Length: 291
Ligand SMILES: C[S@@+](CC[C@H](N)C(=O)[O-])C[C@H]1O[C@@H](n2cnc3c(N)ncnc32)[C@H](O)[C@@H]1O
Figure 1 (tube, protein in one colour):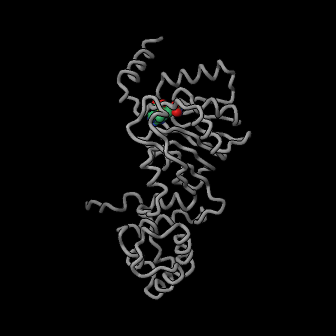
Figure 2: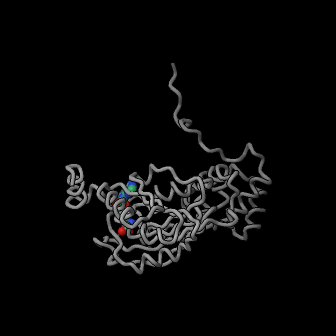
Protein backbone atom coordinates (compact mmCIF):
# COMPACT_ATOMS: atom_id res chain seq x y z
CA UNK A 1 0.00 0.00 0.00
CA UNK A 2 1.39 3.43 -0.92
CA UNK A 3 1.83 6.16 1.68
CA UNK A 4 -1.12 7.95 0.19
CA UNK A 5 -3.38 4.95 0.37
CA UNK A 6 -2.36 4.34 3.95
CA UNK A 7 -3.33 7.89 4.73
CA UNK A 8 -6.77 7.43 3.23
CA UNK A 9 -7.18 4.03 4.85
CA UNK A 10 -6.53 5.69 8.16
CA UNK A 11 -8.89 8.55 7.33
CA UNK A 12 -11.81 6.47 6.22
CA UNK A 13 -11.66 3.77 8.88
CA UNK A 14 -10.43 5.54 12.01
CA UNK A 15 -11.95 8.89 11.33
CA UNK A 16 -15.12 8.20 9.41
CA UNK A 17 -16.17 11.86 9.56
CA UNK A 18 -13.77 12.54 6.69
CA UNK A 19 -15.92 10.32 4.47
CA UNK A 20 -19.36 10.63 5.96
CA UNK A 21 -22.23 8.23 5.41
CA UNK A 22 -20.23 5.09 4.68
CA UNK A 23 -23.06 2.77 5.68
CA UNK A 24 -22.47 -0.14 3.34
CA UNK A 25 -25.29 -2.43 2.29
CA UNK A 26 -24.92 -5.92 3.69
CA UNK A 27 -28.25 -7.46 2.67
CA UNK A 28 -27.97 -9.06 -0.78
CA UNK A 29 -31.73 -9.63 -0.97
CA UNK A 30 -32.29 -5.90 -0.53
CA UNK A 31 -29.83 -5.16 -3.36
CA UNK A 32 -31.80 -7.51 -5.65
CA UNK A 33 -35.05 -5.80 -4.61
CA UNK A 34 -33.57 -2.44 -5.63
CA UNK A 35 -32.55 -3.83 -9.03
CA UNK A 36 -35.96 -5.43 -9.57
CA UNK A 37 -37.69 -2.15 -8.73
CA UNK A 38 -35.45 -0.36 -11.24
CA UNK A 39 -36.52 -2.78 -14.02
CA UNK A 40 -33.13 -2.45 -15.67
CA UNK A 41 -33.09 -3.29 -19.34
CA UNK A 42 -30.08 -4.74 -21.16
CA UNK A 43 -29.36 -1.59 -23.18
CA UNK A 44 -29.48 0.86 -20.26
CA UNK A 45 -26.83 3.00 -18.61
CA UNK A 46 -27.10 3.01 -14.82
CA UNK A 47 -25.36 5.27 -12.31
CA UNK A 48 -24.44 4.10 -8.82
CA UNK A 49 -23.91 7.32 -6.85
CA UNK A 50 -21.71 6.67 -3.81
CA UNK A 51 -20.68 3.19 -4.91
CA UNK A 52 -18.67 2.21 -1.81
CA UNK A 53 -17.19 -1.25 -2.36
CA UNK A 54 -19.69 -2.05 -5.10
CA UNK A 55 -22.57 -3.79 -3.29
CA UNK A 56 -24.90 -2.37 -5.96
CA UNK A 57 -22.38 -1.73 -8.77
CA UNK A 58 -21.49 -5.35 -9.53
CA UNK A 59 -24.98 -6.90 -9.46
CA UNK A 60 -26.00 -3.97 -11.72
CA UNK A 61 -23.22 -4.81 -14.17
CA UNK A 62 -24.86 -8.20 -14.77
CA UNK A 63 -28.08 -6.56 -15.95
CA UNK A 64 -27.18 -3.23 -17.60
CA UNK A 65 -25.18 -2.24 -20.68
CA UNK A 66 -23.08 0.28 -18.75
CA UNK A 67 -22.59 1.03 -15.09
CA UNK A 68 -21.01 4.27 -13.90
CA UNK A 69 -19.83 3.96 -10.29
CA UNK A 70 -19.16 7.32 -8.65
CA UNK A 71 -17.15 7.36 -5.42
CA UNK A 72 -14.89 9.86 -3.64
CA UNK A 73 -13.08 7.67 -1.12
CA UNK A 74 -9.80 6.68 -2.85
CA UNK A 75 -9.64 3.41 -0.93
CA UNK A 76 -13.06 2.38 -2.25
CA UNK A 77 -12.20 3.68 -5.71
CA UNK A 78 -9.22 1.35 -5.96
CA UNK A 79 -11.28 -1.57 -4.57
CA UNK A 80 -13.97 -0.92 -7.20
CA UNK A 81 -11.38 -0.75 -9.97
CA UNK A 82 -9.60 -3.96 -8.97
CA UNK A 83 -12.88 -5.83 -8.56
CA UNK A 84 -14.08 -4.70 -11.99
CA UNK A 85 -10.74 -5.72 -13.53
CA UNK A 86 -10.64 -9.08 -11.77
CA UNK A 87 -14.20 -9.85 -12.89
CA UNK A 88 -13.48 -8.66 -16.48
CA UNK A 89 -16.41 -6.30 -16.18
CA UNK A 90 -15.67 -3.93 -19.02
CA UNK A 91 -19.08 -2.34 -18.68
CA UNK A 92 -18.18 -0.82 -15.28
CA UNK A 93 -16.62 2.65 -15.29
CA UNK A 94 -15.37 3.91 -11.95
CA UNK A 95 -15.51 7.71 -11.65
CA UNK A 96 -13.41 8.98 -8.72
CA UNK A 97 -15.35 12.21 -8.17
CA UNK A 98 -17.76 14.05 -5.98
CA UNK A 99 -21.30 13.13 -7.08
CA UNK A 100 -22.23 16.81 -7.13
CA UNK A 101 -19.42 17.62 -9.58
CA UNK A 102 -19.84 14.88 -12.20
CA UNK A 103 -21.18 15.49 -15.66
CA UNK A 104 -24.39 13.52 -16.08
CA UNK A 105 -24.90 11.41 -19.23
CA UNK A 106 -26.47 13.23 -22.18
CA UNK A 107 -28.37 10.09 -23.14
CA UNK A 108 -31.16 8.45 -21.12
CA UNK A 109 -29.98 6.92 -17.85
CA UNK A 110 -31.20 5.28 -14.66
CA UNK A 111 -29.86 5.65 -11.09
CA UNK A 112 -29.75 2.87 -8.49
CA UNK A 113 -27.93 3.94 -5.35
CA UNK A 114 -27.52 3.93 -1.63
CA UNK A 115 -26.61 7.61 -1.56
CA UNK A 116 -24.82 9.60 1.18
CA UNK A 117 -27.82 10.88 3.15
CA UNK A 118 -26.09 14.14 4.09
CA UNK A 119 -26.38 15.38 0.48
CA UNK A 120 -29.74 13.87 -0.49
CA UNK A 121 -31.37 17.16 -1.54
CA UNK A 122 -28.35 18.40 -3.57
CA UNK A 123 -28.21 15.01 -5.34
CA UNK A 124 -31.91 15.13 -6.17
CA UNK A 125 -31.45 18.73 -7.30
CA UNK A 126 -28.69 17.69 -9.67
CA UNK A 127 -30.86 14.91 -11.12
CA UNK A 128 -34.24 16.66 -11.18
CA UNK A 129 -33.89 20.47 -11.26
CA UNK A 130 -33.56 20.56 -15.05
CA UNK A 131 -36.07 18.45 -16.99
CA UNK A 132 -33.56 18.35 -19.88
CA UNK A 133 -31.42 15.96 -17.77
CA UNK A 134 -32.45 12.61 -19.31
CA UNK A 135 -32.98 10.70 -16.04
CA UNK A 136 -35.63 8.02 -16.58
CA UNK A 137 -35.89 6.36 -13.16
CA UNK A 138 -34.10 6.36 -9.83
CA UNK A 139 -34.29 3.76 -7.09
CA UNK A 140 -32.64 5.21 -4.02
CA UNK A 141 -32.05 4.35 -0.41
CA UNK A 142 -32.65 7.55 1.52
CA UNK A 143 -33.44 8.52 5.10
CA UNK A 144 -37.04 7.56 5.94
CA UNK A 145 -37.84 11.13 7.05
CA UNK A 146 -36.62 12.50 3.71
CA UNK A 147 -38.64 9.90 1.76
CA UNK A 148 -41.75 10.95 3.69
CA UNK A 149 -41.12 14.61 2.87
CA UNK A 150 -40.61 13.93 -0.83
CA UNK A 151 -43.79 11.86 -1.08
CA UNK A 152 -46.03 13.75 1.38
CA UNK A 153 -49.32 15.30 0.38
CA UNK A 154 -48.29 18.82 1.41
CA UNK A 155 -45.83 20.58 -0.87
CA UNK A 156 -44.37 23.66 0.76
CA UNK A 157 -41.47 24.44 -1.48
CA UNK A 158 -41.27 25.35 -5.15
CA UNK A 159 -38.23 23.19 -5.91
CA UNK A 160 -39.95 20.00 -4.77
CA UNK A 161 -43.09 20.97 -6.65
CA UNK A 162 -40.99 21.47 -9.79
CA UNK A 163 -39.59 17.93 -9.38
CA UNK A 164 -43.03 16.46 -8.89
CA UNK A 165 -44.41 18.07 -12.05
CA UNK A 166 -41.96 15.98 -14.13
CA UNK A 167 -41.47 12.91 -11.91
CA UNK A 168 -43.62 10.64 -9.76
CA UNK A 169 -42.26 9.80 -6.30
CA UNK A 170 -43.09 6.60 -4.43
CA UNK A 171 -42.02 5.53 -0.95
CA UNK A 172 -41.89 1.76 -1.43
CA UNK A 173 -41.07 0.67 2.12
CA UNK A 174 -38.93 1.44 5.12
CA UNK A 175 -35.57 -0.28 5.63
CA UNK A 176 -34.12 -1.06 9.07
CA UNK A 177 -30.60 0.05 10.14
CA UNK A 178 -29.55 -3.64 10.44
CA UNK A 179 -29.28 -3.81 6.63
CA UNK A 180 -26.15 -1.62 6.72
CA UNK A 181 -22.70 -1.80 8.23
CA UNK A 182 -22.16 0.20 10.33
CA UNK A 183 -25.89 0.67 11.00
CA UNK A 184 -27.05 4.29 10.60
CA UNK A 185 -28.82 5.99 13.51
CA UNK A 186 -31.92 6.60 11.41
CA UNK A 187 -34.39 4.39 9.56
CA UNK A 188 -34.07 4.33 5.79
CA UNK A 189 -36.51 3.88 2.94
CA UNK A 190 -36.61 2.83 -0.68
CA UNK A 191 -37.64 5.82 -2.76
CA UNK A 192 -38.57 5.28 -6.41
CA UNK A 193 -38.66 8.24 -8.79
CA UNK A 194 -40.12 7.76 -12.27
CA UNK A 195 -40.17 10.26 -15.08
CA UNK A 196 -43.78 11.06 -16.02
CA UNK A 197 -44.71 9.97 -19.55
CA UNK A 198 -46.61 13.24 -19.86
CA UNK A 199 -45.00 15.90 -17.69
CA UNK A 200 -47.54 18.20 -16.06
CA UNK A 201 -45.51 21.17 -17.26
CA UNK A 202 -44.02 21.01 -20.76
CA UNK A 203 -40.20 21.27 -20.44
CA UNK A 204 -40.14 24.47 -22.56
CA UNK A 205 -42.25 26.21 -19.88
CA UNK A 206 -40.31 24.85 -16.88
CA UNK A 207 -38.59 28.16 -15.95
CA UNK A 208 -41.90 30.02 -16.24
CA UNK A 209 -43.59 27.46 -14.00
CA UNK A 210 -40.81 27.71 -11.42
CA UNK A 211 -41.25 31.50 -11.30
CA UNK A 212 -44.99 31.03 -10.64
CA UNK A 213 -44.30 28.41 -7.94
CA UNK A 214 -41.72 30.68 -6.24
CA UNK A 215 -44.27 33.51 -6.26
CA UNK A 216 -47.08 31.32 -4.88
CA UNK A 217 -44.90 29.82 -2.09
CA UNK A 218 -43.69 33.16 -0.70
CA UNK A 219 -45.81 32.23 2.31
CA UNK A 220 -46.82 28.54 2.03
CA UNK A 221 -49.63 28.93 4.58
CA UNK A 222 -51.51 31.47 2.45
CA UNK A 223 -54.88 30.57 0.95
CA UNK A 224 -54.74 30.15 -2.82
CA UNK A 225 -56.31 33.55 -3.80
CA UNK A 226 -53.76 35.52 -1.71
CA UNK A 227 -50.88 33.33 -2.89
CA UNK A 228 -51.79 34.08 -6.51
CA UNK A 229 -52.53 37.78 -6.05
CA UNK A 230 -50.73 39.97 -8.54
CA UNK A 231 -51.02 37.25 -11.20
CA UNK A 232 -54.72 36.40 -11.60
CA UNK A 233 -57.37 39.12 -11.40
CA UNK A 234 -60.16 38.57 -8.80
CA UNK A 235 -62.69 37.32 -11.44
CA UNK A 236 -60.04 35.00 -12.93
CA UNK A 237 -59.29 33.68 -9.42
CA UNK A 238 -62.98 32.98 -8.79
CA UNK A 239 -63.20 31.01 -12.05
CA UNK A 240 -60.00 29.15 -11.26
CA UNK A 241 -61.17 28.12 -7.78
CA UNK A 242 -64.38 26.81 -9.30
CA UNK A 243 -62.42 24.87 -11.93
CA UNK A 244 -60.14 23.38 -9.23
CA UNK A 245 -63.13 22.56 -7.01
CA UNK A 246 -61.69 24.30 -3.92
CA UNK A 247 -62.89 27.14 -1.70
CA UNK A 248 -61.29 30.54 -1.02
CA UNK A 249 -59.61 29.34 2.20
CA UNK A 250 -57.79 26.43 0.50
CA UNK A 251 -54.05 26.65 1.40
CA UNK A 252 -51.65 26.82 -1.51
CA UNK A 253 -49.55 23.98 0.01
CA UNK A 254 -52.49 21.55 -0.37
CA UNK A 255 -52.89 21.89 -4.10
CA UNK A 256 -51.82 18.67 -5.82
CA UNK A 257 -49.67 18.38 -8.93
CA UNK A 258 -52.66 18.00 -11.27
CA UNK A 259 -54.16 21.17 -9.75
CA UNK A 260 -50.88 23.03 -10.36
CA UNK A 261 -50.93 21.82 -13.96
CA UNK A 262 -54.43 23.28 -14.41
CA UNK A 263 -53.48 26.51 -12.68
CA UNK A 264 -50.39 26.97 -14.84
CA UNK A 265 -52.30 26.32 -18.08
CA UNK A 266 -54.88 28.89 -16.97
CA UNK A 267 -52.08 31.42 -16.45
CA UNK A 268 -50.61 30.80 -19.91
CA UNK A 269 -54.04 31.02 -21.50
CA UNK A 270 -55.75 33.87 -19.68
CA UNK A 271 -53.12 36.05 -17.99
CA UNK A 272 -51.21 38.54 -20.15
CA UNK A 273 -47.44 37.78 -20.07
CA UNK A 274 -46.62 41.07 -18.33
CA UNK A 275 -48.39 39.71 -15.22
CA UNK A 276 -46.52 36.37 -15.19
CA UNK A 277 -44.09 36.17 -12.26
CA UNK A 278 -40.47 36.61 -13.33
CA UNK A 279 -37.52 34.48 -12.31
CA UNK A 280 -35.21 36.82 -10.40
CA UNK A 281 -32.07 37.45 -12.48
CA UNK A 282 -28.79 36.66 -10.70
CA UNK A 283 -27.61 39.75 -8.87
CA UNK A 284 -30.91 41.60 -9.42
CA UNK A 285 -31.69 41.56 -5.68
CA UNK A 286 -28.82 43.88 -4.75
CA UNK A 287 -29.05 47.58 -5.47
CA UNK A 288 -26.15 48.83 -7.61
CA UNK A 289 -23.58 50.99 -5.84
CA UNK A 290 -23.73 54.62 -6.86
CA UNK A 291 -20.54 56.07 -8.21
C1 LIG B 1 -24.19 4.96 2.08
S1 LIG B 1 -22.64 4.57 1.36
C2 LIG B 1 -23.12 3.43 0.13
C3 LIG B 1 -22.00 2.55 -0.37
C4 LIG B 1 -22.43 1.42 -1.30
N1 LIG B 1 -23.21 1.91 -2.42
C5 LIG B 1 -23.23 0.39 -0.56
O1 LIG B 1 -24.47 0.44 -0.65
O2 LIG B 1 -22.63 -0.45 0.11
C6 LIG B 1 -22.34 6.06 0.46
C7 LIG B 1 -21.01 6.11 -0.26
O3 LIG B 1 -20.90 7.39 -0.86
C8 LIG B 1 -19.56 7.87 -0.75
N2 LIG B 1 -19.66 9.33 -0.80
C9 LIG B 1 -19.97 10.20 0.20
N3 LIG B 1 -20.03 11.45 -0.27
C10 LIG B 1 -19.77 11.37 -1.61
C11 LIG B 1 -19.69 12.33 -2.65
N4 LIG B 1 -19.93 13.62 -2.43
N5 LIG B 1 -19.39 11.90 -3.90
C12 LIG B 1 -19.15 10.58 -4.15
N6 LIG B 1 -19.22 9.63 -3.20
C13 LIG B 1 -19.53 10.02 -1.94
C14 LIG B 1 -19.06 7.31 0.55
O4 LIG B 1 -17.64 7.20 0.54
C15 LIG B 1 -19.76 5.95 0.58
O5 LIG B 1 -18.96 4.96 0.01
